[in-house]
Image (cartoon, rainbow, N blue to C red):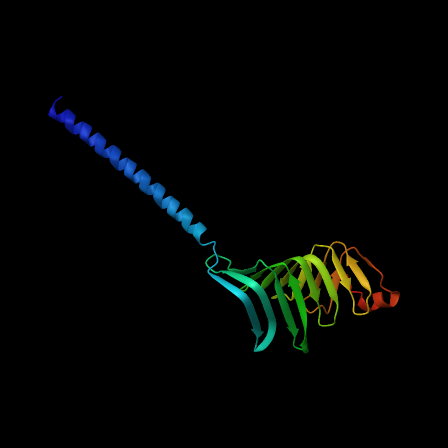
Length: 198
């Protein structure tokens, strides 16, 4: 073997080693990026026996309590989740001493969007004493709307009942609401008083 052949083999070996190095480096960078994206999906804060107070122009509009709350702040749409249940009190400026209540086994709160979702034995009691029961509900606080596609069971202050088979939509102060495919034991007078234009 002459000197030129030795150089050629050395060059080929060197190029091959460099190629392997760049392939491994590229793979490592890709894996780092992929793991970096995954690593953001963990709670940045965990709060035990949480107590949240939300104010609107100094007025307390909402109080929320939960055994544990996890805050996910490093992702594109940050949120708070209560996986072990939540108890929310919401206040009306006209009746600040009589809050409405929402309880659920699970809740997720998007603070910036002011959007809430609650699931699992959801119970709502309004400032007027009406009681709503369903499996899930969504509250868009910016639009002042509450809605669900689940069957809704309602008990009024006088004990009369109503069932919205395909859900409901309502103002979040329940001053007006619409039920879909409803039925119940309302008297004619009660229907006229509580009927919402479709």
